[in-house]
Image (cartoon, rainbow, N blue to C red; front, side):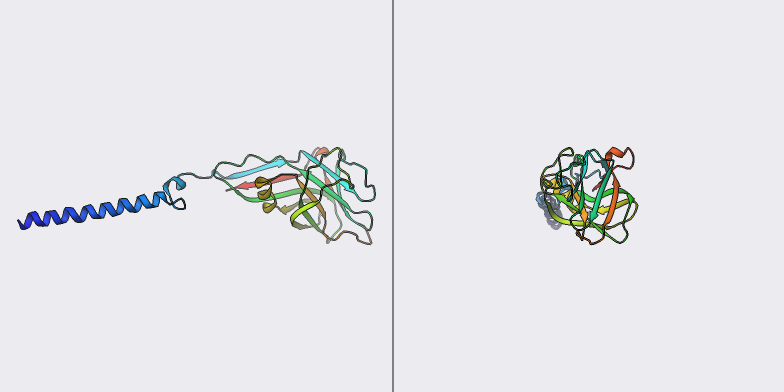
Length: 207
């Protein structure tokens, strides 16, 4: 009898342990923050580069002139003659289960004024390459990404801006001198997509 009683006790304890384990896994499975279903869904990650599908620049002095076909994009700080560039990119599809972990706006500078801070903002409304001018340019919106002037490819960390594009509307970027209205012209020139090489690029990393 004692053997049967002991055996019954062992079976009962084993059943309780298995039941508790099963309950633990069941509860975990129902927890969306720590479930097997969520863990089984992974982002494939990777980096994609998009070239501009529209770009232009606008000139405060020539406020109704469009420069959408130019091979050069200009940014300048000068009293009554500030200049800004605009660039738009078609965003790659967001991979399943991924988010934007990094993004860089790259513009190739052919000439530069030293020591300037250049800001990249989101454009706040739609614009077209063939019609945008200083007078009808969209306002900037959101926070700015900044970099220092120089020649060759310059890069702006625009992860926050690109995340906002995916979450809402993508109207591209406006790049301007951080301190417009300089007494002496401080000018930067970049190749546009019409230049044929080193076009504006948007490099996005997903993870």
